[in-house]
Image (cartoon, rainbow, N blue to C red; front, side, top):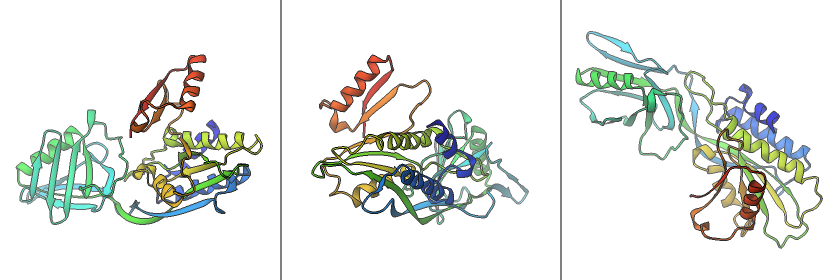
Length: 321
């Protein structure tokens, strides 16, 4: 497991951002591992394709310039500001106090003919955070600011200066893949057990700083591969076991949505167990179900709780959607 975590979170995969060549490569590696473990293709294929909007890097250079007739200055990337990955419907903005500006204590909203731009003050001046991608958000571009960057923008607007920025990402439709395999059960009348983990992460930023995604979620993916390795040695199970390495989780669970919609009638009443961020340091094992399962009996949940208690392992049970 650890070996696979290190491999999938290495620089070779550059953070496995959905829509990138490295994400496709990670999917190909997982597909070949499914084959090596003698999983059968699910519905005659190891690959489920779906189209979704993804952030794609351009060849331009990131910049943020403040200027007037008396001169100009550039904000420092990674120190004053940094793009959040949340949306790139627009990637360039030029604005001034002549535009519609809403200034709040922790954010600035800018609206003009180019769209709507949100600046937000990053917590503790930490610009290392990178959001998941949500292209349907009402903001066309989101940029995180340090307190220093926030104050520079406020001062520039007060002094009637013009501000212009370019972020080298754009939205584009891309073909993505989930990777799927199956251990066929002896009783096809039984609903399957479905084991899943997402293999995508957040890629890299405008200056090629990589978000490696070891914990989120090379860990769950590697554990899924180890489960496939183990369960494939047990002989034929009574119910089928489907393994799915899901894509575009960081874009709003889109790979999971695509798999469910494509296979709705084949997976009715199935049990689904998803593995994400396993082995988190200094954090209990979290056993999470949807809110509708609260106060319902679960033999599986009680079994895992019993194992944790017997082995003095910290755990918590959560019911969240």
